[in-house]
Length: 393
Image 1 (spheres, one colour):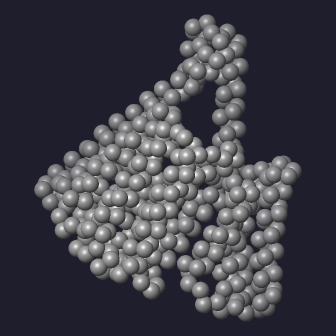
Image 2 (image 1 turned 90 degrees about the vertical axis):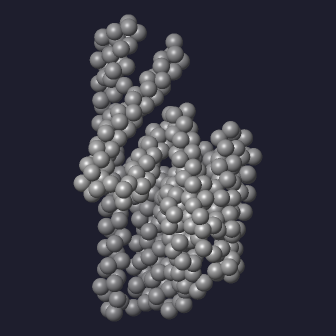
């Protein structure tokens, strides 16, 4: 931005006095944004420490406190954090950053309340049921106060619930089915986020939920790009009756339906593309589950899908001028290429040559990607500034 302002001054678009004023304003704005980020980080860490302190205080006095006192202390902290956070962030709006941190604290304490009640009254509920109850309890809070930290917490609880429900307890699936269930649940979470894109008030929540789904989707595809996860000897139906099949089919149907609804509501080209990509991934995962192969056909299918998805994300990021997507896709491209280099050449090269060549690839590749990322960011900034300048003209 500073280079653009200097360029405008040299071209006569702005005067030297205007250049000086704009550079001072830009420096002050950057300073304020850095200070706000620092305050947000400190407040969030403080909220986490306060919540941990409350829980540890009750745990340390477990025998001394009565049941009513335990519940009263925890509920008082929860309701107090909720009320004060909403009051500071949205009613008086005097300390919005602190208020948001307290709202995040109240979402954490709601979970502590649920687990404490289950323990006090000896409720025979598994961890999955309690996590699901926690997730359902904070969803209304997310709709009332669409905050980023709470959206991330909801996304994390979603996966914690799924893994506790599907991969533990009665009828649990083995570890080799983890990537396929991760993929289907990630597509479903992405579809849920897509459904909320039409709401301007929930736009931030929708983006965070979609990013959370996308990140787990990439991890699942990355695992499936290796033989250890993409070569199954028996189908999920043959090995585990209808349990795993039912979970996958349920996720797939819901994801497909929500992506279609999101496309109907948004009517955007990217929405149709998201539906097509999600459907293709679900079909590939379903074929792997129900019609496994002892060969490497599925490994190659998922390799192609992952590489194509990363290039697609990079292209969409460039079109939307979205640095989050650009950084994510470039980082994953680097991880993907390097990991498969290791997988391919680990047994083929002498140890010394392997590490020297791998180190050279990391150094040169990291430098190249950093330069490209900087160039892309600069072009995006130049285009944005050019449009603003044209609009003023």
